[in-house]
Amino acid sequence: KAGVTQTPRYLIKTRGQQVTLSCSPISGHRSVSWYQQTPGQGLQFLFEYFSETQRNKGNFPGRFSGRQFSNSRSEMNVSTLELGDSALYLCASSLVAGEWETQYFGPGTRLLVL
Amino acid sequence: KQEVTQIPAALSVPEGENLVLNCSFTDSAIYNLQWFRQDPGKGLTSLLLIQSSQREQTSGRLNASLDKSSGRSTLYIAASQPGDSATYLCAAPLSDQGGKLIFGQGTELSVKP
Image: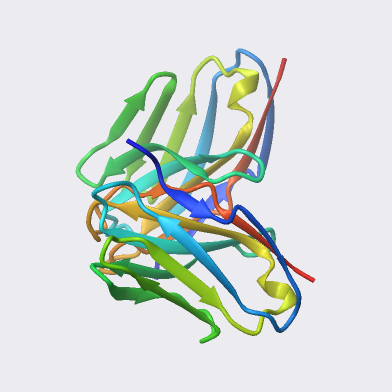
C-alpha cells in the first residue's frame, strides 16, 4: 500500500506570494492533519480534516488555510508569505479521526521564503 | 494542557550500546503515546504506538514503555547501530482534540561506529 505523498517536495517563493501544498493520504484513510516544523518551534499542529470537514485548528494566523476533497486528498494554502513561513510542512493521515489512531506521515514539503 | 518534553536534546553513543530515550508529559489522561523517527530533512516514521491501557510495546530492537502515573515514556534501543542515528520524537494527542498531536522537541541520536 502506498504511503502518504506530498507535492511538491521543495518550493521557493518570495515574500507576499501565496503557495498551495498537496497531500494524498494512504488509500482508505479519511483523516488528514497538517504540521509545520521549524528549528525554533519544532512541530506544531496546523489543522485536521475528516470527511471534508475541518475538525481542529492550531494557533496559526488566518493566512493559513486548508481543505479536503471527497477523495480525502487535502491541500493547504498560505497567502501573503512571510520569511517566518519557511519550514518543513508535514501532513499525516489516519484511518479515522481519533486520539487512538496511529498517524502516518508523508515526506514533507520544504518551503523556503526569500 | 498537554506538554511533552524530551531530555536530552542530543545523545552520542558507541555502536553496540543499549540506550534509553526519555519522554515526559503533563496530562496523565493520555489516550496513547507515539514514538517517531526522523532522518535529516525527511518526514516522520512511526516506530511504536502505546495505548493508554498498555504498559509497553516492542518492535525488533525497540521497546517503548508508558507510565501514566509518573507522566513518563521511555524508548529503549538495544544493541545500537550507526543506522539508528536520527532524531527521535515522542507525541501525545491532546485530550478530546482528535488527531492533534503534541510533540516533544526530540532527541538527536548519534551512534558512532
